Length: 294
Image (tube, rainbow, N blue to C red; front, top):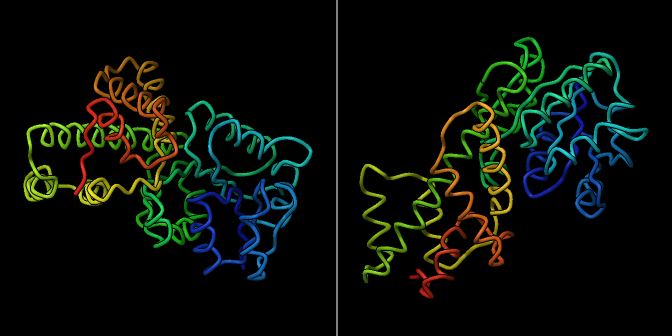
């Protein structure tokens, strides 16, 4: 049976790893010990270093915060690549820059491994349900080889192209996500300023051509004042920054995204960075002094 390693047990990584454990032998690693304890209690091996994961696993999924964390996991005496065997697979599900993706792919290849670029679209709920959208980039044969692991974590598995194309797809998706959330927040704020009831507005938005599951979920959270992070605003800001860098490199004008990044920056400066992306609205509320609540 294939042994799968999982590195990075954050809010998304934990449910993803549990879903992998349903179908495969699993070994996990996390920089801090506490998230590994439930796995150890369930009899899942916990490695002391990323290298320890590489020594046991045939396929390793990495789900960390940024490019620096990805490099730290891969490289060095205790890094994943030090324990990799020729032909082992590394699947990077972290959202990082295209340059970081390329650098990671090169390191894995130099160590004799195979690399698949597969960030995910979705938040904690889909991660728990195993319904994340898997944005796979890599050689067809490599994606074929790890497809069962990807399917344990998500559905569908979207084949985006070669290595790096999964990352490009994720940045494009999250560009849209940020712009949708900022526009939604502005719409609700304007309606509130004009005396409209939040539930009436949510029904109006949800019943027409601009209806979206995102607005249903986040509208309810805003109306209830629930900003517990399913996807933190800090990470949305990071992804907008990466998308803008990519757009600049490709000379693609994205003025709305630039404005959304500044709105996210303002909300973060006002102390809402660790809250959910629904907190785009908090950046407006702090200026107007009015809360949009049921």
